[in-house]
Amino acid sequence: MDKNTLLQVWPIPAFEDNYIWCIHDGHSALVVDPGDAAPVLKYLAEKQLHLTGILITHHHADHTGGVLHLIDAMKPRQIPVYGPASIDISGRTEGLLEGDKLEIDHPRLSLKVMEVPGHTLSHIAYFANMQANVLEPMLFCGDTLFASGCGRLFEGTPTQMSESLAKFAALPKNTLVFCTHEYTLSNIRFALAVEPNNTNLIDWADRAKALRDKGLPTLPTTIGHELQVNPFMRCNQAEVVASAMAISGETNLPSPAHVLAVIRAWKDRF
Image (spheres, helix red, strand yellow):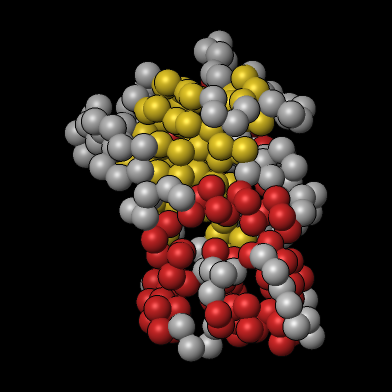
């Protein structure tokens, strides 16, 4: 890739199943949710990239644990650290709220901030719409949305998660979704229990397994794909509703949030 041309987004593996996403133009780089500094510094050195900023989606340690080490490693340069405004995160320099826009020069990127509570109350996501150096829209969603799944409700409510996923569902269908965990195969196993007759999901199960058998990531996914295979984004679909009623014994689940509450609790014990 030529320097200063199209952006590249690369997954830096961390811990057992985290991805730290590195957004770069061949020279300057941003990293998303660096839970561990060591693999980030190794990748930056190998690719001869200059770290120019850090994006944080939420406060959990596997997403923030490397921030202070990265800040220290970049001295005397000071790098901005963006994150949710409503909670203290060590090293954060700029707090962000719903609708805020980030205009980053190096690499050149325009990001819109979305508040997406559910996994945590202060969780945010970053959305990059189409621009000169971005071929397709991009979403950095932390632990709110996963390929064929969604995050556990550690702090938020099913209604909040339902509303957050609805925000994502309204994005362009070709939006690339950069989740931060490789949970796809286990998520698919659960999704098939919810929708055993979903042919798109059955096909995706085979393709995802083939990717993992080769040691390749199943990410990024897309919004359009998730609307076809992710039960947490399909809580208005007949088979998902029927499965939720069967597992809960309820005869009426009046909203997608009620359905999500049932299937999220089911997933927690699956």
